[in-house]
Length: 133
Image (tube, rainbow, N blue to C red; front, side):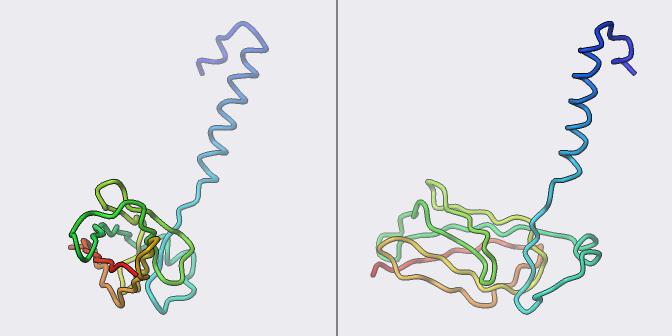
């Protein structure tokens, strides 16, 4: 290995420590997988073999058609929330294909619940329209 050629013991220790921390850091990374409505618990082995997909969309104002920035989007039963960007776009990654209830909320707008959205890995683009309170 290259660090065996290093002359300083201190440098060897630093390189070894860096590599050890890098390996430990890579092993401890977790992936949050969102599961379909009704699947409360899934075996870890099942989730490891599943293919995940993503859901993208845009959120617009009902009256003006303008994009809404900062709208909170999440799946019902999940505590992971994403927010729309300056163009009203959002993306939720690592989703197991299935049907989901999608919740959206924004200041001065009525909360919205889109029921049984089919996320199937083929065409996962939705458009949400929010109404002012």
